[in-house]
Length: 110
Image 1 (cartoon, rainbow, N blue to C red):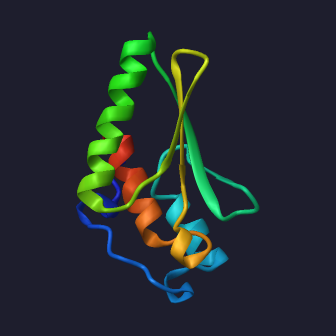
Image 2 (image 1 turned 90 degrees about the horizontal axis):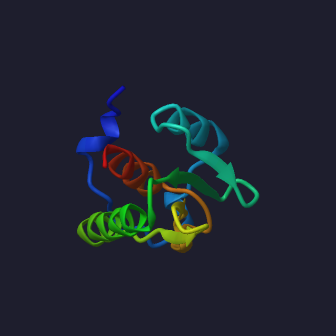
């Protein structure tokens, strides 16, 4: 399944006007693969597992490149030597924005 979000670009959000409501969040969750709501539903996150440490580190670097291109930066955690957790939220809106789902789609494409 290729999400319609893959061709969108992240846009700056400066106020809570960019925050999504519950219905919007649930609809956009259908557009991303295996991302889950977390932290009182103000974040989405997903765990990735790799064959080894190098693959996990390479993945983190690729996510970092995409984040820089989009101007939207996730929280990233490397743990248990071969696992990566990516967490997305939009701090300026105090929750989730469409940018989080756009970036999730691009991360999934890796």
